Amino acid sequence: MDPVLVLGGCGALGHHIIKQLLHTKKASEVTAFDIRTDVNRVPGANYIKGSIVSEQDVRSALETVRPKVIIHTISPQLMGQKNTHKLYENVNIGGTKILLDCIAKTNCVKALVYTSSSSVIHNNITDLVEATEEGRLFYWPEQTEFYSHTKAVAEDLIQGANRQNGLLTTRLRGSLLFGEGDTTATPQMIANARTGRTKFQIGDGTNLFDFTYIGNTAYAHILAADALIRESDGRADRDGPLKVNGEAFCITNDDHWPFWDFIREMAAECGHPVPKNKVTVVPTSVYYAFAVVAEWAVWAFSLGSKESNVNRRMVKYLTMTRTFNISKAKERLGYQPQVGIRDGIKRAVQHYLAHECEKKSN
Image 1 (cartoon, one colour):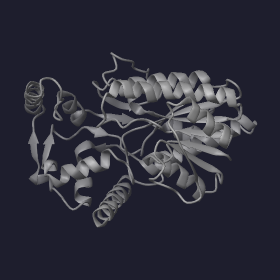
Image 2 (spheres, rainbow, N blue to C red; image 1 turned 90 degrees about the horizontal axis):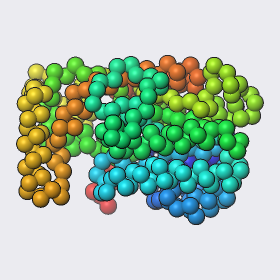
Image 3 (spheres, rainbow, N blue to C red; image 1 turned 90 degrees about the vertical axis):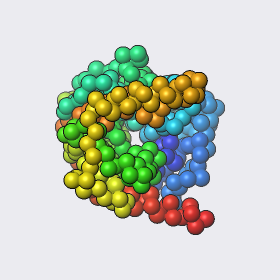
């Protein structure tokens, strides 16, 4: 695949991709491009500091590396950001446009793998049961999460660039990633466990969910890049029934879990187990009413400048069913999860706790 450029290579997913590329010897010339390059460094990789919203930075990186493969994992965090609509639009849409323009001018990239999101085919209101890639994309305002809207628009851009200027593209849609280095799911669940929130359950707890260990997602990206290169080189049929270019793929652990069982498994691993007979079940309607009150209270006391952490959207997320069918990824990419859910939870929590200790000692 050499040379490979991993955009967002110092992020949680990006650095897993780089580690696996070098460890498996799928590539030896690997460069990370990121706005911050002092974290998640991998021995043997090269690093370029830059922003995807800067045409100069992106063009310079492409001219320096002359990549054959680009894996584009850059995206703002889904939570904890300011001016989120503008940020999501600038990075997910604007940054992707800049990248594609620079690729067209550089004329060296053969394969582009884009990290999308399973949420692009979900309006975040209705349940999803064994959803496939055939589901239509949702756009704002029908799409209730602006982040997901921008990922859908970016997918359209990536799809539109397929087979242009010798470039082949594909899109991977992970579902709630967790693992070593993730800055959203694992830290939040550990924080909830420590504060005792996992003693409470919203709804009857039967809603199934798809979680994805981040190392498995990285593995899927490498499989996709490898497949695109084979199609580009003529070693695989780019027009056949098993083609990868121009396609989207759902990526999960292929193991549906009851949402609240996963939460409690994470809590137990970090030393805060909650037996099921000690769980307090809060009816969905009761928690919804509480969320309405919380929203109005925070809005009133902050004069509309803040949003409550407890809100009506959260109620739906905590009680919905959200599962995907990954048969297409198995068939066309040869994807099979390499790490199971329980092992992934152990790795995620142990990594988090170890790094937490390091920060305290420093």
